[in-house]
Image 1 (spheres, rainbow, N blue to C red):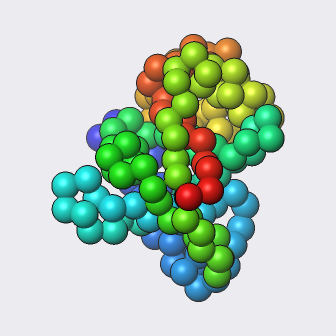
Image 2 (image 1 turned 60 degrees about the vertical axis):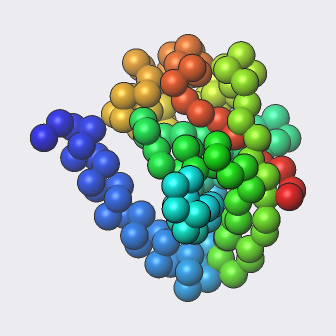
Length: 148
């Protein structure tokens, strides 16, 4: 089993805890629950994600290759975001690759080192630096969060 697979299993286990706490009304950090219709079934799917502020906007960035929520959002566009006991409808608009570069650079520069390291561990970036993550913008989906 590769390091990325081990990391993914550990994160999946942690995600179950995050989802459970959020559903109990416990909000922490930038974590929210994103609920979106499944692209094939239409059945609502819920994923814990981080909504981050960069340059006055709110964004959600892909942290794993082939993340199911990314494909579902591309198909649906409209989602529900839940933080603690608050739920709101939102529209997620995918940011074009060239606009992602400065956003990803700033996100990694202003975040704990673990953010850049996670993108390397999952194979989306070659190095945990702001420059390397920005250079990987074509592999990292970024969505702008807007009111629905």
